[in-house]
Length: 369
Ligand SMILES: N[C@@H](CCSCCCCC(=O)O)C(=O)O
Ligand SMILES: [Zn+2]
Image 1 (tube, rainbow, N blue to C red):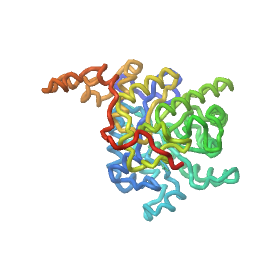
Image 2 (cartoon, rainbow, N blue to C red):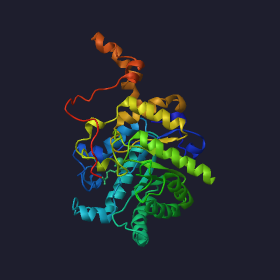
Image 3 (spheres, rainbow, N blue to C red):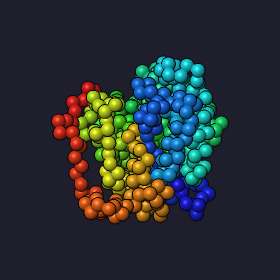
Image 4 (cartoon, protein in one colour):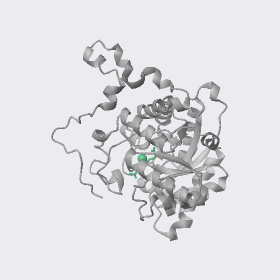
């Protein structure tokens, strides 16, 4: 939550152009599935209408943890996805998109955060012939976002760069800043378009912020974004870089990402990154020149706090949730047990190789896709 002296609000491009670090929020659909508000499989966001208090609370926790942006809970909020799901026969996507924007704005205003409204891959993409259908779906969401006057827009979680380019082309007609993140591996998008070329196409379509979200872990996402940066540099193009990886270790996944693993989506817990992994990821992302640094599925508020704590020297402040943390485990100095007190050090947590507690389980799986 930005200190009062950093207000009034600067827009996303003003902040990034000034070299500021922007901390993104974490995952919503997966986190709310675990909390009983989202149904896996179709992952539709009707909870914005059915349980706005649950969406509001998760936004608030990300804000308190240091997120500078509240992404609207509008993932998969398009008629084709909602209708097929059967999850909410009496709720329309327009309702979801309107309420989600209101909730995000309400919480963003509590802490000087920006509202980013998002569209995501549709269910109608097949090939080049799908362009008008995809663009119509994106336009329908965009109309609501413009009425709600969100701060900027994102086309996220696209596996085909072609579909993401179409989404960006629609979003840029708004005149608002547009970001785009692909759910791709370091090998490139689902059609084998390399990350460098993906970034070039997105920037040429008008995206001012490009990167990746979801599907693979921080290490692989960093690899992909570094390739994107090289591609843009080679092409003489400029854009800000954004990264919002999975909060799960999955070095064993293929280019299908974590959804190809037998543990997806109900047995990923043993793969969750810890806060110290997030410190390392945040520092490597910053060193690579990435300035919009957040998380996706698996990233809980305490992970976002770790981003904000690692980059506090660059940002000049700690998030409110750090009042209940103590940097690098220093809170444990208050423990009555000497062996716990002994862990109140950066060296303990930075060098720890945590055991999984599952002696009969493998560390890696054989992906199904
Ligand atoms: N901004 C979104 C991104 C969700 S990423 C995809 C989740 C799984 C979807 C699937 O398996 O189809 C969110 O945080 O929920
Ligand atoms: Zn995700």
